[in-house]
Image 1 (cartoon, helix red, strand yellow):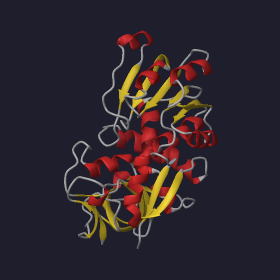
Image 2 (cartoon, one colour):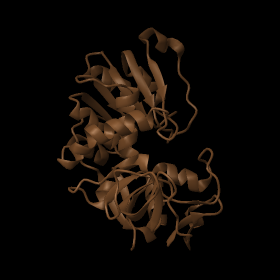
Image 3 (cartoon, rainbow, N blue to C red):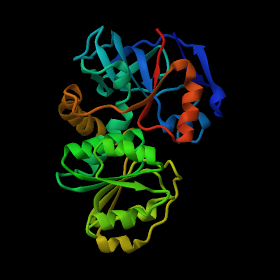
Image 4 (cartoon, one colour):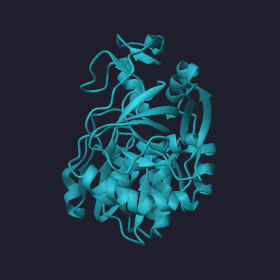
Length: 323
């Protein structure tokens, strides 16, 4: 088998298509033949060497969809030949090992491309809104970077819960797409004040829950847009990790909540469980729709990384894996 491996941190040219040893599933693992894999901003940081704790060498890719080829000891609920999708490191390759707890059956109504567009973005959004923020119907939700995989998923999750949703994006094209997904308020955060627009639209009540990912460039405005007892869920740092805020947020009793689905003790027992039970049926019946912007052959991985850096896509960039 082959895959894209990084031996030294650096630019896209450091991702090398090489022959790799065929992995053998151990206890609790499955070997999956990858048919499609998703692209994520975090992968550009891993490749560059700016992602905390990333060792060398490593195979690129964080999520994928394909067919089970081998089932390891102690695994139940899956069988050889089954269509599946989930999160696993090394998905930009012909085959990859999945831990069973991070793998899910792919609904018959979804293609491998659609399945590969779900795991990282949708599970992050589900964890943020369900497990961390514990949203309830009728709340006001502010979603930063609605054009990203997390933002486009969060929009659909919030709307499915009958929440009012404000969406921010960096272009009119992305805002048009956010409108199609049901956003009630559209904010071009490069040209408009997030806080002014949200407060005006909500009758000065502010947002109940916000998802923060951009960081320094918008953090102050986002916090100023929050209402009493609001929850700010920080799930990324695409615009820089260092932010400053005034402790006056205590007057509004704001909660600042950080999260990572890779390290949260609640992710597998709470988020994965509720996602399987509640979200999978909604993908199967078409209520939830994976948002795919571009599909490329895996051989164009360098192009995919450049597209991520340009921030022009809405939803996911998906790579088809040759068999």
